[in-house]
Length: 380
Image (cartoon, rainbow, N blue to C red):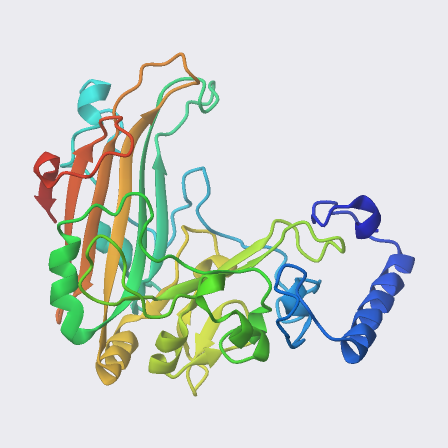
């Protein structure tokens, strides 16, 4: 059917008849027979270059992930405001302080505390957790008699990402990070793992096939803009389509997972459920809370266990932070207000967290080099 359609998208999202199920079984059996009896070659590679067939993940031909039974992610931050949760308690509600819009956008004194977005406490058991990948979106409430984007509305958003560093490199990284602007998403980012089953992460032949820079798993790498040290992204992203032919998922599944170096340092393994990673006593040490609860995008790790693991491995963590304070207008008819761009760095200390942020009013200039002299800087 896909050959006839000349299309391999996965957006039909309708229940298949029973006959189609048997067709899928036959299809995969035929693929296995071909793999056993013919030489594998990627159609886009050099014909003289021999390759070895390792599994269907090479051609993205696998269908259902039997290790993930989630119908979709419960939480996560989208275009709308995130849902408040115990790991997302930091609020912003200063939408109408009496100042004109052009004054509100550039006021940096009322910004949410990024430290409280990273270090959070579970009220049920008072355990402390560190958020290694977070996205927060605060929106001005919309009156019941209006639709969003029918008039101007205000928004503040933050995106934070943790990086592993060798302990001796932390000071150099922090001093460098204070001088650069992280806007443009030029730092190493989470790898998107589309063709890997959740239960295969970190150990399987399929994972080792994808564990290379070509697929976004950069390992230890030196960022641009003169970064003096190597860093390693602390989390990656498992993604599964929300429109499979068999309707095994509804809205898609997107879960954050710990990098393999962090996984080894913590001495934990996947529990077999959700995106929970447990120790030898089956206690949860790291997990993506959005797999089971509403709330902002996050990947949480027990603070005391993470600190101990990093000390054993001679590593530490630093976070880069991006954010924006802006007013969105309806189409091209509203007044445009230059947004406040926010960038910064956070790092672990013996007693908690420290951070440094700087802000700059967007000037609407494209492809212009960042100028430190033009940055309006503030310590947090």
